[in-house]
Image (cartoon, rainbow, N blue to C red; front, top):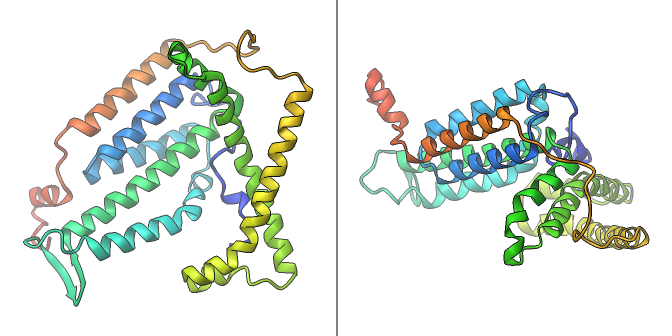
Amino acid sequence: MSQFELLRNITIGQYIPTNSVVHRLDPRTKLLAALSLILAVSFSRAIIPLVIVLIGTLLLAKMARIPINYLGRGIALGLPVLALIFFFQLLFQGWAEPAGRVFFEWGWLRITRFSLHLIAIGLLRITCFIFLTSLFTMTTTTTEITHGVEKLLNPFRRFGVPSHELALINMIALRFVPTFAEEMEQVMKAQASRCADIDGGRKFWRPDRAARTYLPLIVPLFISAFRRAEELIWAMEARGYLGGNGRTKFVVLKSDTRDYLVGVTVFVVSLLIVLLPWPSIRDLLDLLGFANGL
């Protein structure tokens, strides 16, 4: 995979119109379901429910006719975060359970069953976050997300929450994720054409070398972002944009029985993930008689 192909790995913010049953759900239902599962995954401390959520997300992607390999491309950009989680958990959590099962010990490095458990949970959580967020944006247009967020925040307007403005910010942020990825590709190709060592930060994985490599890329990207933001402000002012007060909407969201069933089902599943005493992998293997080595 070329280091210049960033846009193909940006799955968040990309909409794939397949007109599946998942696409036809109310955006408020999909948003609440995704947030509910993300919170459940965040609070869960067992591996089994995280695996269930991951498999369920892949099945939903299959139902939405989203290619699994395309959904997994978001992991490519999350690999540095996953590598950091693996490294720090392995480095600092090995001594958190002095009386636990030790698989390997050499100097300050100590690999225990507890540290491996935490590493697996961290990796599964990040993977579930990426898949759930990507699947939500792939099956929902930015316009639907904007109206859904605004409708969900409307009850808080009486407390001074600017629901329309927050929904607008959310739409702009999602819309410009692929745009900035494309801008980053252009900057990287321009720097590489001038004999810049674009691949140095990835090859050696050193913070000082990575900073020298990516600093000439980040500065032009920020300048381009500010220029696009200014152009967007001028375009909105030229069209007489006044905010959300008194504005009518072309898109009217309507929920049906299917949306309520999906919402209740996902909410119940999220509660079960958090509240049930899920057995560990060792407990399951112990029931099967295979846990002697663990």
